[in-house]
Length: 173
Image (cartoon, rainbow, N blue to C red; front, side, top):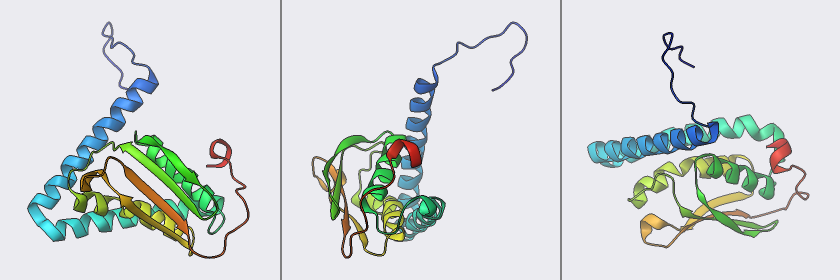
C-alpha cells in the first residue's frame, strides 16, 4: 500500500470490489493493446499476439504440470474454469465427461469484436490444454465474435482416457 501524508486518508474499498475493478481494467487494456497491434501490423500483429499467448500458455502448463496427470481432461477443464473465473468470464460447464468438456461463456471479459483477435488470444488456452495431454484437443466451435450467442470452449480427449479425476478445484488447483 502507498503510505499517505499524516491526516490524509482514502476510503478503503473491499478487496473483492478492488479485485473485480482491477481485472476489468486490465482486460480492457489487453483488448485495446491487441486491437492496436492488429490495426497497426495486421497479420504480423496477429502472429505477435499468438506468440505471446503461446509462451504464456506454455508457462502456465509448466507450472501446473506437476499437479495434473497427463490427459486428465476433467482436471485440465477445472483449471481452465479457474482461469476464466479469475478474469471475470461468465458462463457454465454444459458437458463434463471423460471424453468431452464444454465450457460455455456468455460474456467475455475483453470482449473481442474480431474473430481473428479472439483466436490469436485463445492460443494460450489451446497450448495450455494440449501441453497437458497428448490426447487432449482444444477448440472453440461457437464464438461470440463470429456471431454466435456464446462461446463454447471444447476440450476433447482423443485417445486413452486416464483414471477419474483425483484433484479437486479448491484443494489442489
